[in-house]
Amino acid sequence: MITRQFGIPVTSPGAILRREKDLGTPLGEEIAEVLERGGLVSDKIIVELIEDWLRLHGGHGFVFDGFPRTLPQAESLMSILARLRTALDLALWLEVSQQTVFERIAGRLQCGECGFTTSASSAQFAERPVCPYCDGRLMRRSDDDLAVLQTRLSEFETKTQPLASFYAKISVLHRIDGNRDREAVFADISRLIEDKARA
Ligand code: AMP
Picture 1 (spheres, rainbow, N blue to C red):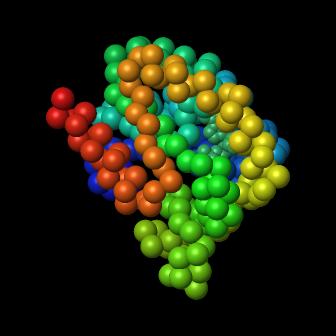
Picture 2: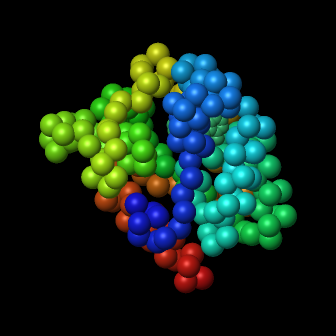
């Protein structure tokens, strides 16, 4: 939605890694087991992916979805941006209750091609699981499983949670109530991006 509305390219290491795994590339084979059990892929691999992506797409703004997830990744990003003389404008912290996480993950359908995400409870997609943007097939993610989710949540608590104070300290953190519907959350995000563009 951010790319469609603002023309800002978005990348997500999770989406890149799932594609590598599905294609069976050497990187995909290396990280498949970590993805399946819900662990975090090494900082070195993730930072290289982000650097490569920025070199190709990062000229006029960018959004990272699911990056950084550890303090070393956040510190690497600061060095990369300093080298590129680019400022970090916003760190958006989408706060959701455990109940919301469980409900959304239990019903999540994702497009294998473009990453569009929706809920299996939506009648439109339950009957015809096809992406409205690219005609890709909408599927459950293999890591959207209760046991794997426990690992993902505990990785979040120990390794990602500390990033809230890291970004609060440099005054870029904005907390958003992610328990609301997609439109309300997107309206808040849009407002922050528009305010930043005006500043
Ligand atoms: P996501 O699509 O963001 O839910 O990520 C799916 C999976 O990809 C995660 O459970 C991790 O195994 C891996 N992954 C995604 N982003 C990162 C990251 N920044 N650092 C380490 N592993 C990641």
